Length: 442
Image: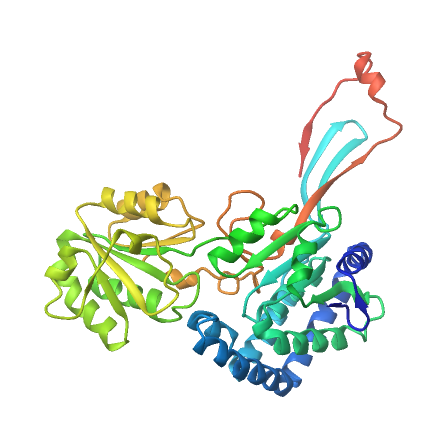
């Protein structure tokens, strides 16, 4: 059922071994963790043909699921890996290796009294579990971030990517085997749906669960977990073309946000257009969408300005739909206020973008819109850990506790307080013999 690199284990055993491994990982040197990641990156690149062959088998089996409508086209797209994909996996691992050591950083030092110093220092979370659908590239991203931050990780992918996931974990374990200081149970791959059910109950062994998949999938994990969950539900992102927009920029940004990779959670699903520029903006925008095969669903005003290009009537349900496909809904708004209200009502707190040359309007949008990412004159597709310089990402969080937006190394670290004294006792302060100074130190 579950596999560590070799022997079959129960989920409880796998978690217990991961917990032991995490204690060893937490004390590894920065140089060792970095060297291990570079070895893993080299192995991914060298053994790319194995990954591609495994993925080809997965895709062949998944085509039947797609035809039977048991696997969405978006999930099938995320499943596919090509040579560029394996090269990107290796590159992301190297990016993570190049990042500064996230462990042992002083977040604050306070002199509580003479010779009594409090240090707030970063440290690993411990054991993280990642449950994901399709997306085999999740494995090297998460494995790299976990090792760089001194954490053990358990992985459970969808059955549609079973062969690819198994190949990736095997390659990763083989690369790390040349470093005897790194425990074999630093990474564990689980295989069955029953493994997930047991995993969700092990709150005494797992510190964080990160689900990556559809909104329904993430909601299920959150509803059934006794372990803290970090993740996002729907990716309903907007591009708002303001009355003061540069229309060429607006067309380019809206097009990239929708078309560059429509299956991604940071792809735009709704385009809002200020009424003052709608007549001038829509003809070129609709022409670009039509040429790219994008289905457009628009409000009555959008339909009236379509110039004969196909625009289906949008319903209220469209404003709350994550298409993950070449479909976009368009609404013409009467004011900046209406745009902000629409985004805050229908958005999923993921990523929102305004296109405008009015700096005041941009600042107001970024202040008032409630989302993990708020952008000015850029595509929503920039919401990505690799593009943010995080090396890779665990996922994107739309919550407000622990981490928000693309989550990198910091999402797998916490902190501890180290208090260093010289025989100090609380009784002396209670008795008034000593008093606290609470002096911040650099």
